[in-house]
Amino acid sequence: MRLTRIAAAAAGIAIAALTLTACNSGTPGAGPNEPGGETTENPWTVATDVSLEGSPTFDAIKARGSVNIGVKEDQPNLGYLDPATSVRSGFDIDIARWIAASLGYDEDKINYVVVDSANREQAIINGQIDYYVGTYSITDARKEQISFAGPYFVTGQGLLVAKDSSITGVDDLTADTVVCSVTGSTSIQRIKDETPAKTVELSKYSECVEQVKNGQADAVTTDEAILIGYAAFDPDNLKVVGEPFSEERYGVGVAKGDTAFVEFVNAMLTDGGDVWTAIFEKNLGPAGVTGTQPAVDPAE
Ligand code: GLU
Image (cartoon, rainbow, N blue to C red; front, side, top):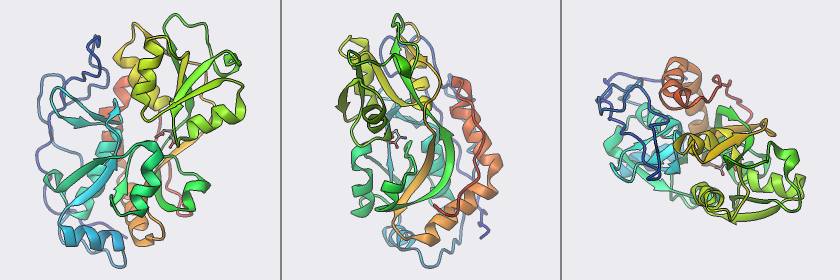
């Protein structure tokens, strides 16, 4: 399926310097749009006359006239809302915007809905969101409840610790180590299954980062791409250690069985390698995240 991209994109938004915490000393994740607030154009275009037969998701979007997208907003470089400027940014946010634009919906027709890891499947099943883009690993268990387009990115689980920590990798997690992660994530499950560490479960990774900073937890565990964003915010106090110890393939979560929508997004990703690269280099490249675009898997 080829996509129609006719209308020119609206002017890109300025991405302000990130301000996750007051101690931020730099502007990690700063892409070509910032700092300084210069605007650049988005690498995608807003399509017109989009035809997408047989997709209940697209039918609902058309009837509503806007797109409801599930996202994160506390993950710098991936899904982030700057509390100071109210600017939303990140690789996942741009993937979400690119999908909306390919469906014919520009930024002013997007409603962002923040959904934590534990509530993603239910938000899709309830129809609260049309699709979800937020460090969402494709897993067989989740595929029993929803469908995935993608993968659009691959990363692996890692550890974030205090700068002076002696933990150097997953093998250093003992029964005396307190590891914080998020309810409903693949990250917390793997630590429970594969290490003797004590676990603390919270709703958001940013809450776990605070626990490490104030000494309540010894490590935060989740995908390296997420942890690199937190470490870049506070390099004086935090570091990412060890080698990744899983493979996390990020997908776009959609209603189970909406094959037409999945195929549409997969075609967009497959045909849009240049857009993917521009989004990656804007959001993740500057923070030192490495990666190339994975091939989509039609079997998902
Ligand atoms: N990618 C992992 C997952 O989907 C961890 C990150 C997250 O919770 O979003 O469970």
